[in-house]
Length: 136
Length: 139
Image (cartoon, rainbow over all chains, first blue to last red; front, side, top):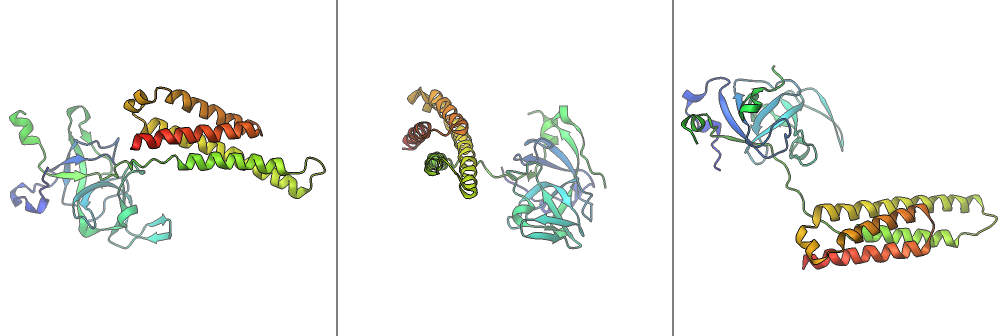
C-alpha cells in the first residue's frame, strides 16, 4: 500500500478534525487494531495530555506512526541509562503493546515538529465506533 | 466495496510499528541448563558427608539453589521451543515429540526435588535428543 503524506493532500481537505488514517500493525492492540479507521485532529500545536494517541512522523524513517503519549515536555523518563528530562518540545511515545513495539525506547524522545495530529475518534469498523481517550 | 465505504476509507496509513516475532529458537540454553543441573549434583556429591563446615553448608545450599533454578530453565526453554517453534508437520515426522517433552518436564521436576545423579544424566540425555530433533528440522 502506498502511503500518501498529509502534506501531499490538497488544502481543501484539511478540515480540522477530519483527517482520516487507517491503522496498520499491532503495537497499539487492543486499543487500536490493524484496519481501524481514525479521525485525526491536525490542528493541535502542542503535545496532548498523557494517554492521548498521536500520529507523528517517526524519527529516522519519516513514516507516519501512531503511539500513545507516555510523557510530555518537562517530564522525567526513567530509561536504562538513567533519568531523561524531556525538553520543552519533546514527548515520550510508547506503543501499548510494550514488548514488540518500536517506539521512543528505540528512537528516543520525539520533537513537536514531528507531531502530525491527535487521533480522537474511531469511525470504523462500525462495531467499535467511538471517541478515543485523551481530549486535550 | 460500496461507494460509501470507498469514500470513507482513509487514504493514509499510520503505522503502529512493532517488531516482527524474532523467530530465533535455540535449544542450546536448555542443554546448558541440563548440564548445569548434572554438574551441581556432582558438586553436591563431592561435599563431605559428615562434620560439614559452614563453608560446606553454604556451598551445599548454593548448589541446591542453582540446581533447582536451572532445572526450571530447562523446563521453560524446552516449553517455548515446543509450543512456539514446532509445527504440525514436525510432529508428523516425530510423532513421539509430545511424549518426549512431557518426559523432559517430568525429569526436570524430579531433578528439582531430588539430588539424583541418574535423573540428572537422564535429563541431560533427553534434552540432547530434543535438541537433535530441533536441529534435524532445520536442515
